[in-house]
Length: 580
Image (cartoon, rainbow, N blue to C red; front, side, top):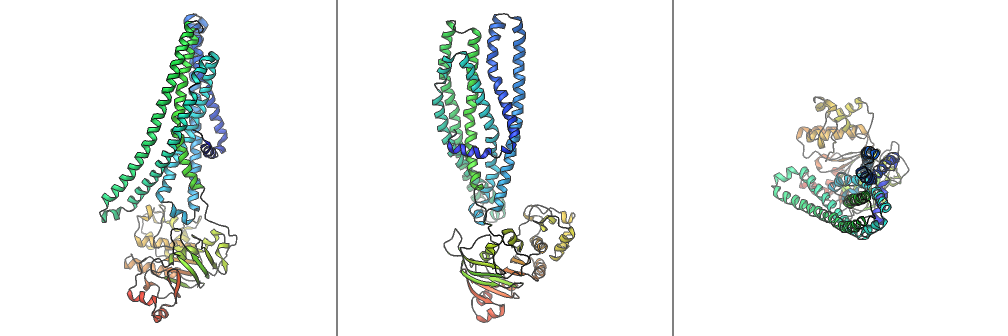
């Protein structure tokens, strides 16, 4: 049950309850008291039979029932205390693990978010952590308490008749082998079950997020079948655990019953030969019968432990992932915002073709540079490298002649505002979304940012104004309203570098006009990088960079590029929209 790997996992889990060692100590004392009461029960049966029932001792007739009642009262109080304190400790540990996991997710490199699906990450937090919690509450209580109970009852049995006790424990090694074999089977099945749960969560998330696409493309049956297949896979792995667990306990009990039958036979012969008093015989048989219940619980808890250890492996796999690198120590204060790419190469882990291939480029300070190119040309990659969501394999990126790899990561990102075409709003107030990541921002500044983004005109009409809850992903707002909130967020940050993933193509004319006006205001006196989707919106850019296969193909103003009759001119002639 506890091989070396399991012991290491459990030791690591126990570090989460170490800060609460005083409460753990109370739990252990309560468990010890509860366990000590178990052998007291058969011990009191001897005087109850020999002295009270047979000997008619008046003192025994009065005292023994009172002692039995006292034992039950003490046991009940101790079990209550151990249950409450152990659950308190376990839930404190669960809180710490969940907080650490969420913290880890926030600091994972971008590649890790591609490697883990959102569903699997959700499954780790919502499913795996409670499994670990059971191992930290029910499991160790049963292990400690029932081990003490077994030791106490064995001590009583050895004291009463060591010969019969030795006969009973001969079966021990066979039981240990069965438990060990069951542990290995359950660990593997539990891993597969947790993997299936991750996939199921992913399927569910996709179905909820893509419900419009499912309906419009008539894919209800297809998605239902995919979900059913995943759920069926989870059911099969769950049943594998159930089968092993279900066979484990009866098998152990059967072996124990064989040992019990042998002991009962010998004990009956000894009693017939007056080697046992009636009270000793009843006390011994009672203690021996009582010992099988904690053995059964210890055998049964193996399922919980193996599920918990499989979950712990899943959790620690995530927690052991390295954080995104942040080795820089330099800081920028009010930079001009000139950005230079020097022979930069970058290839995604999932691709063989470079996304950027020996790119050398300068983005002038306080000027607007538009990035143009077909899908896969490297536009988004260039923006991702500036923000250090990814690290280039070769070459350097500099801001005001300082390599960004030498900058402290948070300081670098403080210099950058980002307005995406896929606006992310959080299920919070409008004020919290505009001032996202900033605390103690005066309401006046939030209102001014909203006005600059042409968002105040719809916010002030809302019943709760800035205190309006936007809903999941801003579901209570229109597309144009969400965009204006994102622009207000960038206004409030007031960063010297602005990256804009152009996002007006899907909006109505009025919303597009307002957002364009807000963007023009926002672009003033900043270094602006526009990832262009509609060429008509970048005609006034100070510099247009045309990328092709991760390399610089053309660069110039709108008119100069048209005059070259090259890639840009062809794209412009084909139409304003560039498929992304």
